[in-house]
Image (cartoon, rainbow, N blue to C red):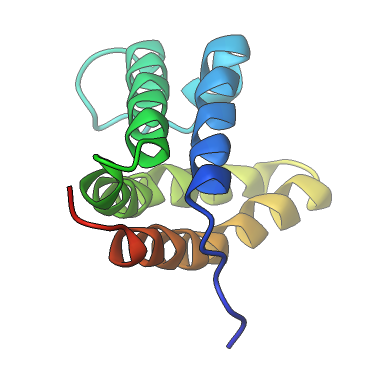
Length: 125
């Protein structure tokens, strides 16, 4: 099994970059929001982007890293339904879109493991 990265600042950068993407191009994220959720897809897009930004800040700061990294692992698990929806919806698009969407699903596992590793390696308070 490949080793997961351990850099907390790289993880924070990934989260921050995703947060910026949610704000800059929200339409692509709106399409991933399951219809069963209350409210509007755009509201969920902005809320998840704000959460990613908060997690990035928490992971970047040594005093909050342990808790923020565990919250990040939970967040990565929590957004899995959106990634599944994206893969299901991609069945009606091009083969490339379907391959990208399905290929993205297994990436959640190393992301969760990475966040857990950052949490475990963080020093207490």
